[in-house]
Image (tube, rainbow, N blue to C red; front, top):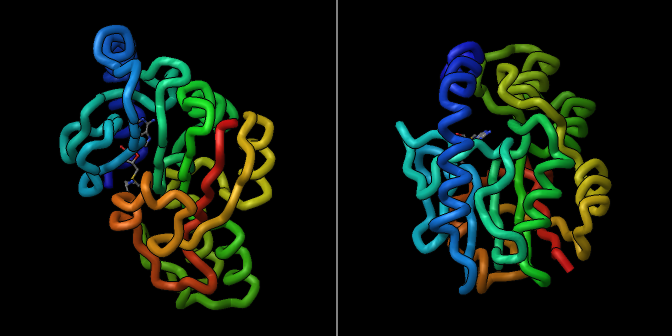
Length: 219
Ligand SMILES: C[S@@+](CC[C@H](N)C(=O)[O-])C[C@H]1O[C@@H](n2cnc3c(N)ncnc32)[C@H](O)[C@@H]1O
């Protein structure tokens, strides 16, 4: 895991290049038709074939478009059939802007499957003092408070807490409808779109999942 300083330095140095690359991709290469599916933040291991994978990390992972997700997304409006992100949006400083951008890019009837650390579950497990539910990542912590902090902020990598009600509020404000929570790995309302994505997900507790997954429609 890169230190916070190293990451900030990377984004400062590479930010203008990523912005230019995203603009060039959008202008000259982004598909305008077809069943375009976009995967935001595949990371080191989760590249999905036949999707357009977008990430800032092209050094230790694989992506198709090198771009900063804090910038406007490198796709034309109303051209994307399905958008997917898994453990990515908690890194983004402006979620309203993010959901607005995803909404802009999706076609009418397009779907966003979005997943991240489940704040509702973490709060329930913190109150139940169930230290075993929390991971030892990124830091090894003994106390329930330390483990909770580890999960929520992940060494200051995460900048927000994802709960159902908060996401419902900002996704609805962005114009999404038909929001539904899904179990990671096991559930999608759109298997024809997201079957490949389920295989990249992980979960060890389906009663109180570590990952909050929401699917929503851009009407
Ligand atoms: C925790 S990893 C998740 C990787 C994968 N989706 C998974 O579930 O294992 C977060 C990913 O989001 C990417 N990411 C975070 N912030 C980003 C940004 N502002 N622009 C582009 N990619 C970003 C990181 O480079 C990393 O690949």
